[in-house]
Image (tube, rainbow, N blue to C red):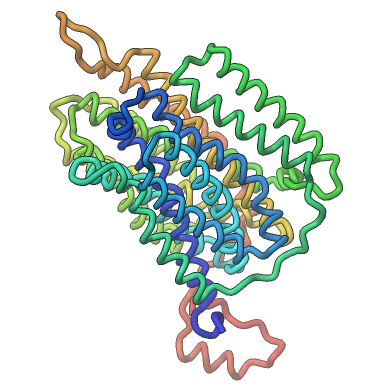
Length: 494
């Protein structure tokens, strides 16, 4: 019945966009509330950071199992179940009566987040044929870019005018709407039969990712040379190395790393990971820079960053409909990354006298660059990946995005901490603007490195996704009706 009521392209897009929005927004909105949470529970900033770290580690633990579960019990069931878990856990986080309860509920929330993003991406790309992948990516890039931009705004409003608990409650209505819509209209998809569960692959990949994420998240707080940090990062790296050996030898691997043999997927993955480092690191840095360096309120800082999302929304429509089909992904991604690097350099000239409206205009333009990277990399990355490996590829793709974002935040935290964001001048503490400016130069450098990596993308490999879609006119419909059954129908957006 669902497929007769509404197109599955629409159904999957709506459900996945809602899931992506709350999952990605969670990466930025909670940071705004950490100080208020610490005051509520009378604890230190280091202890409160466990709410962020616990979520990130939980996501890392569950991502590797997403593809297998989707093939085992069906992607629809996993997607809707994970949205339900995330939504319920968000409500429980808002109701938490102690820091320990909050951390526990954040771990539960991470379990939902770790499953719903890769399974949802798999369903999205199975619903859209190759020729329409770029349009699917245009849908996907909106919540991906909008969520981290509006997160600080919503977080600032919540902390200032209501309570820190609303940074979690805000997920509930979005999650409920996505869940109800999915139950009513989302149909299950054909999927490969799951093989035997790869226990060794799951243990090494989950623990490896979890330890690595924990070490990266704790490094800025306790020091990169501290014993626990070094032990976690080293252990995580060794487990991931063991996972590579195990998975390449396994007959039915949990994570089929042979997907990296696909040249286009490999190149797009490298670009996506480096871009995630630069983008999520930059959004995190700007929130601190505007508040601690330029003395904006949390709400002002969020409203200054928010126009970037509108730039993404506008640019993604033009790129998907006109530019991408005409010239392919490589030049678009290179231009977008160089634009992001240039904007980061321009922002490094900002000081306490800089107009907030000028910053909003600059970040609006940066949104064009963000759309020019995320949209083509997601559309082209799966162009040559077979349908039977879509679930594995989407799991790997999301794991890279998550790790890249965490590394970006950790890298920028380490840079500004090393340069001391607050210094004493004439006996008074004042912001060290130089530390934030250096962080912006680092973001620009990572974006340039991603642009160099984008040069390895071959437009010819992405040709199946570079088809310009056109609306079918009445004359086209009549001609198609008169065409013999064996004829190939025109590609249409209807």
